[in-house]
Length: 235
Image 1 (tube, helix red, strand yellow):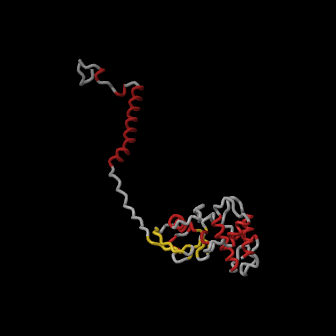
Image 2 (cartoon, one colour):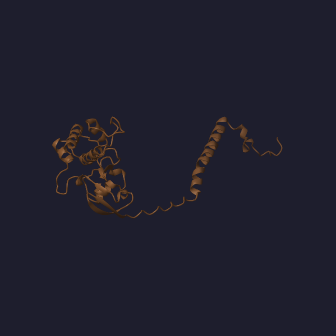
Image 3 (cartoon, helix red, strand yellow):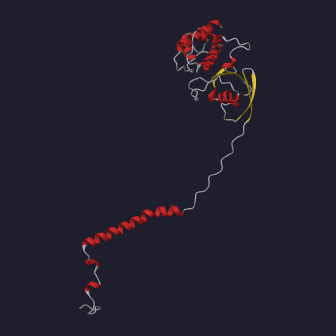
């Protein structure tokens, strides 16, 4: 009889762990591993719950209030209350009520919003209204004379049926008007035989190149070229 063991002690009262069946050892190790994995997986969530709350967002800057902007459009002064970010196109349509200028792509790609600023054709969707104070802006509403007589370009577009749906026509008319003035002033284009000299003739290729910034989704290009050619001959 081993020492420290009384006669009343039974061998089953002190089980030896090493004597446990292999199936019990495997189950015990599995439970220990599962408990450890659960503890490790829960640690980040416990840590996240104990972290301090995020700081509140910084207050945003207050919007810049509108200010008066005076635009001279078609010979009339318009004093408009505009934010600095308002485009010339939106100022004409939404504030001055001149709806003839169209918003097509709003990215300067289609030319529907073309207007004249001191005689230069520009895409009004790509420029800010505040940049054109003091300039003379001409929209399609201002191409006709004060008596209501159509300009040579407008008459030519009607005679040659140079439009279909008409959405791009205001920009086409403004662009063609500036085109004739540019050619009359001797401005060359990329198809001119010699860009260093005054172009001698307004050919169809010259017209197509100079009108290339104005898209007609209906495809009335042949009639537009004919109309510009006729307006040039009648000017």
